[in-house]
Amino acid sequence: MLGNFNVRTDLALEAKEDCDAQKVSVRGVHVKEERDEKREIFTTTVKIETENGAKAMGKPVGTYITIEAPNLSIPDEGYHREISKEVARHLKRLIGEKEKSILIVGLGNREVTPDALGPEVVGNLHITRHVVREYGQLLLKGKEIREISSLVPGVMAQTGMETSEIIRGVVEETRPDLMIVVDALAARSTKRLNRTIQITDAGIHPGSGVGNHRSGINRQSIGIPVIAIGVPTVVDAATIVNDTMLNLVEAMDESEHLKELGGTLKTLNREEKYQIIRELLTPNLNTMFVTPKDIDETIKRISFTISEGINIAFA
Image (cartoon, rainbow, N blue to C red):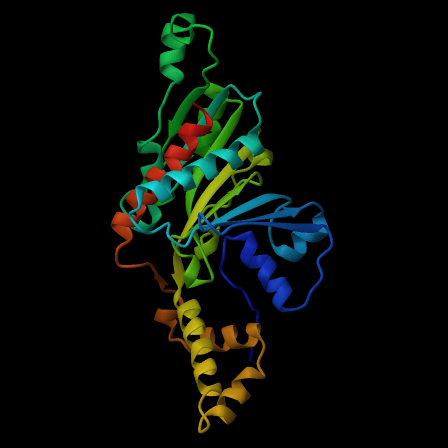
């Protein structure tokens, strides 16, 4: 009955949590946690160092930094400034100082709000490549200023081309030292929607979280180092029902009349519960992805926070 179990998530942290829930020990994967209770910023670094670990996790070899900020969706400028500084700190750690020319790519569809994160981030960046090339040393005055350029390639339905094809053409022409891609992600947990930022040096597979498998954008396919920044903006319907069922089981355990039924459901493991839910949903609901009702304002706010982090890192 269970068939092939496949949780749609772009977050390495959630993949690691799945392994832990199944009590699977994965070699070649190391986890480090940082908790800043005062600022309410929690950072988890997952390092996948071997191909065995990559296969078990379902993620490429690389470093995955997950910043969890419960108040990220709240309009608090001071809090968002702190998040921007965290993004800048981790970018500097992954990139280093040697890259002078950086191409920043905003992936996604500007016409679909949950998928507009990348284009919105690019719209808030300080672009410097044309200025540096135009004025050169007159502008620099002895200071090191990185050449920042940007690209919003759209999606295949708009261009008829793979995003990676467009990016490769631009990279071949402009020859940047490094590329940063920004994209909206899919999560398995509703609590991480618009409250989590993932930064990784493993690149990205656009659309993988929602079942649209496009060509990967990484060092192997593009030819230069690729840093990916993403925020989960959608979850699928099965995830929401699964979270609701878990809350229902907990409520049943507290009720004398329903404790027996709740205990029966508890005998199923996480995979079995999730797969049963997916199979019980109608075909229409099974392919449905959900986003919060205030996604318009949230995308504007978070995109500015991420762009400020990038601006700070390369100021």
